[in-house]
Image (cartoon, rainbow, N blue to C red):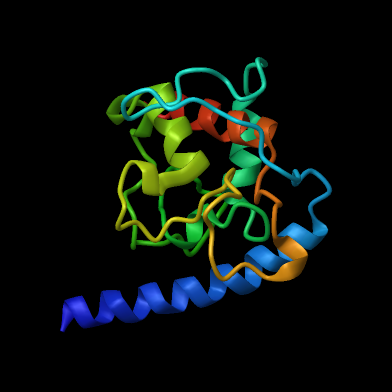
Length: 158
């Protein structure tokens, strides 16, 4: 029964993501067209996507934003300002202790590179995606700097 419930929640999540992400993309001026190349080494992307350090405060705003990142739809964490956090994915509490900065970056860019069975969307990938509406093709969900900001937040969560 629990497995059936998790499957139902995952299906609902995918429906929400396709609808909400579409709205976020149309509203987000920072979404980029044609994501630049990045280099995966092992299970990480060690180099910053921008060459500029991320800002954990901006990262927190992205993670807790229900229209932009949608992170808390699946994840929970130490975000008292955000009620109704998810339980489909690992808690973000302690993420910086569990994964390196590069490993967190890879999971943000395209989590399927670390776990092919994930339902987490690729936040900074445009190649190889299917079932993407025409208005959102070749656009990333988050910009390179937004990815770096979220990574900076996650690294700080020890």
